[in-house]
Amino acid sequence: GQSLEQPSEVTAVEGAIVQINCTYQTSGFYGLSWYQQHDGGAPTFLSYNALDGLEETGRFSSFLSRSDSYGYLLLQELQMKDSASYFCAVKGQAGTALIFGKGTTLSVSS
Amino acid sequence: DAGVTQSPTHLIKTRGQQVTLRCSPISGHKSVSWYQQVLGQGPQFIFQYYEKEERGRGNFPDRFSARQFPNYSSELNVNALLLGDSALYLCASSPGPDETQYFGPGTRLLVL
Image (cartoon, rainbow over all chains, first blue to last red; front, side, top):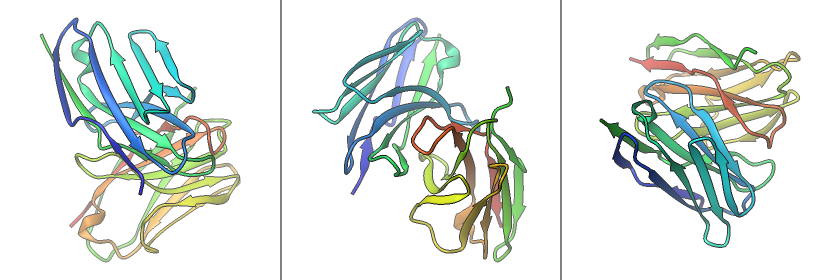
């Protein structure tokens, strides 16, 4: 079967750095995406990794290691508005569905 | 540019009824995917359409059906509603079937 594992909750304080890990088990690999979702809102696309290495977009970075079936999302200079759920999602092969993890709830406190 | 739009935003139905949810993709996007998200879980894939053809279907019963129109908008239909169908239904569009998906705000369905 196909599955993604990520921590259910992470807490941090403003200004800190937090890393959200994602391990996946899929038949094939086409890319790893990260989405942010605030309560009741639409998932918002954050980043995409198809190849090994680090992708940086402002305060957010995403890393992928295909040999370890592992990726992470790194959030720097945390702000209160970063409190949300973060989902990793994998497409196993071209033409197949995007499979989501159960999400990680990030709580940022002052 | 307008993002993905969905209607209605909220809906209350009773068991056994039928519901139709609508989605308009981002201009220029030809692929639409539908997801069901229950509280505390990640979105679960229901359907993907590209150029009006069904490209994929998730593990949902035949009560769920969808279609895509020539203008690339899409409808999701659910028949014989069950209490367990209560969820946030999300539509996502992408330029092509394997490109980054952008989500709409969702339709929150409550089945009583």
